[in-house]
Length: 369
Ligand SMILES: Nc1ncnc2c1ncn2[C@@H]1O[C@H](COP(=O)(O)OP(=O)(O)OP(=O)(O)O)[C@@H](O)[C@H]1O
Ligand SMILES: [Mg+2]
Image (tube, rainbow, N blue to C red; front, side, top):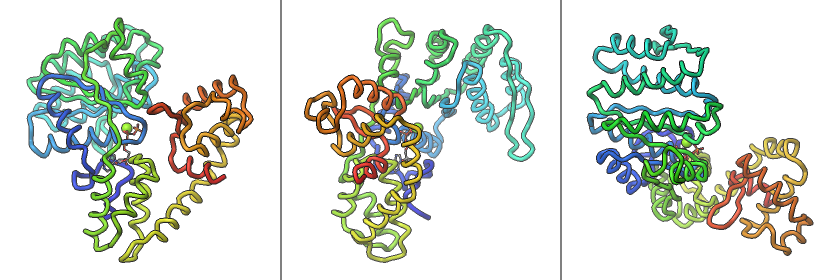
């Protein structure tokens, strides 16, 4: 088995570090605090939540765990659908399942069927009036409140609720969550500025209702040691310095590091060298080239040129500086407009005072253009 998973959390042995963050999350739910977990994309928020849940289950702690990803939801009804679905699946393991199911279903006014193949509940909801959605949501929280068990509920991509047409979603959720004293929440997402503003702006419903936890990059030495050990455990030799060089080259951005070493690991050689690493890296860029080229069609030429310039400069601190504008032949207003669009499209992000291209591989490809 490849020890560098890139799709999902598998098990603690394949998960590097995050000990202090895991401890922080444990301390939070054990002491009745909610946590808002933020980081740039693909750094490991979801992995961390799954790691925490894995450990809670392994220790057979008395918590019922719900993981809800609301990335694809567009309105309150969708939120209710994914929330109740996760709850129904979790409750299937519980005693009195059928009775609980009927209470929940009646509350959310759903039509339910059981999937023939997976055995999991499928259900449809369609509310004709906005009040029905609000009542349904309340019924889910009433249901949770009536259970003896404590629930730990992780809502991933939480910033999504700010895009719902129901502008009162934040307030409705906050009111319901506030009344739950036994259950705890982890709100997680990559739109840091939206989440910070939701939880730290006086006047927003969730104001100071949760502890902020910003996930940083994994310590490079710890990560390099972890990766080297995985190679060694499989009977493959690789230099610590080579591993570290590539982690640093990939900006210690978890997904890209995992992806690179996943591919490097597949070499059947016993001694992994710089030459193998260079080849793997070239292959990755080649594999994705058609996607990168397609960005040219999707973006305006100015946006593409700006991406190119940001990658070439390897993180740009002052995109409005005359030297930058002159070198790449940009006007200040066009840079600002394109930068905003690229940030909105999540192709560029801003961190520690510098702009970077989000996708590390794409950035490296652009650098070489
Ligand atoms: N500590 C870790 N050790 C090993 N692999 C990890 C670790 N953290 C995350 N990963 C892996 O890195 C990839 C990206 O992580 P994850 O999906 O958790 O990031 P994310 O911050 O939730 O991203 P997004 O913002 O896009 O949802 C996943 O394949 C995950 O399995
Ligand atoms: Mg995630």
